[in-house]
Image (cartoon, rainbow, N blue to C red):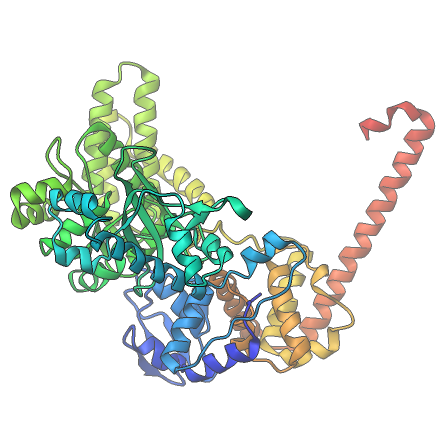
Length: 593
């Protein structure tokens, strides 16, 4: 449930009309009582994105995305619930005072009470502190020498807020205490480590790179060692506002050029990214010491239709590229791969060759299917065993099946792929089509739903059978006709919902309606922070309204649940009788029942 006062959330919603907010992101046209546009959350060619000004919700009837204005900003900007709330509050000129629940466990309380906005402010202070260290005549002397050697301009150092963590263990901690910044806030931000009296700085003797979200808010730091000790690069730990699997370095600098060029370029290093921008190639971002993830793909999909992965051309780089392509194939984006010449990284290449050759590498990037096909043929030629060849074919077929499910393979492309495979493997095309269908079916079962901003979810399991259907029916009715809640509030509770995701929805519905019987769908959506759950809520509400006949459906669903419960009790009684009978015959054999 939200950790903010419901009254505050309601004020922010009322001050941000959903049509106005969404209209700032995409073109909407009136169709009857609703507004219609192309959905920004999937490859939409026929407008399927509906905005209801009366209910103040949106719903895509193709991909299922839906929710209130807060969920739209969460999904569109890849923000957490508190970040989206702050964004809309700023837009409306409303000051947020976070609601902090009390907990019994002190450590848990520190984590739960960590205000994301306070963490961001602590990070902003730290960025200025690190920058001052780098500019200091004595403290920053050696670090500035390294920056000069890497040919990073003064303008880049300023624009990217590059700084220095000096070589003592508690330099930042001491300075923060002088500024009355609480130790627990520094811990929550990942700026210090340890506990109690043994706190020390997280970053020591490192060149510091500032990591910001899409809005420019500082969410974390990356540090490169200047002494050769420890890991070459370290990042801030996961915090309330930072997860490296769902964050990209340079996104705040690159997002506008991504949109205008419809292309995003992904590199591996901080200096690779900064140098590209320094040379005027400003649609480049970098991963943060982790492999390319589904979270990265989801972020980029919101800004560009094409993604070019630019990796080193050595064996490790090619394997990293192959793994990244495996992830990207499952996203609704056009993927291509490029590499700089052997022995160079993008930063070195730019310094040696300049902007035009670098841009040419990106322009000539190999599309994903060509890369996978060349890799397959290379592996078939280099693998001496049948098992090795089968593994290569399996990898290729799994990749194509993933792309098919994501809608990245047209019928013509599929036909060409199958014909090529048929020729290389001497198999009938029908057999290959059949195998792709089988793998596609398996991939659909295992694939992730793109619902939570910045997170990956397994597909929603809505259960099956009489009980699950009855639970869903009850929620549909209550969401479409909330005034009926009074009829059932003493007959059923969220504990009666044994399908986990429906129980979560029930908790939000029951809690909201118990406080306000005629609560709107907008209010119920704001009772959950997970956009995936909000999307389900809008789906249930729409389907409930379409079916109508609310009173009878609610009565029938309650009767069905009661019947299932009676059957469970009867079955449990039969099992108890069976155990007692066996116990009498052989009391030593109880463990086999």
